[in-house]
Length: 167
Image (cartoon, rainbow, N blue to C red):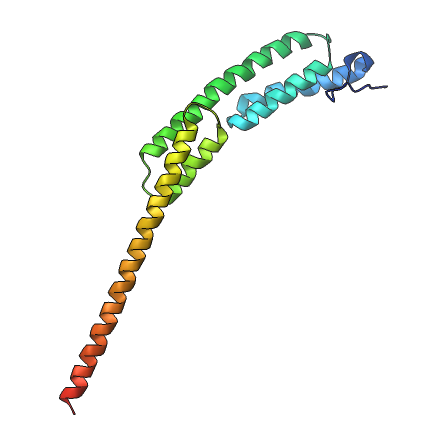
């Protein structure tokens, strides 16, 4: 059961017993099975990375090398399609922005795919829109406050007029 760890922090396959290799192989099979029901991009990407790392630790055990290649391809494809899907959803939400919460959602999606296409431009647009919405809300708050002050002044003037009439 002697295990040697290489510079990348992976257990070197030659040092694993066949029992240990089989145990890792079965764990990887369970992970591969679990990917059938995962829909979240980041979780699926994480699981693929774990599968690949564990399979690499097995070296040439059974079909590990072929599975490393297969899951590396799946990971590349997932990155490409997953990022594009997030990007398209972000653009749809951007077009439908009506309030600050929508902008927060768009920014959150942009954070999931940094450096993908024009997400930095979308991020800049969101920040400008948030600033614009904040200014607009400040103007509205100022107008509401002025209306309240005017109403109070009118009430005070009206009350003084009424009191003068009865004096």
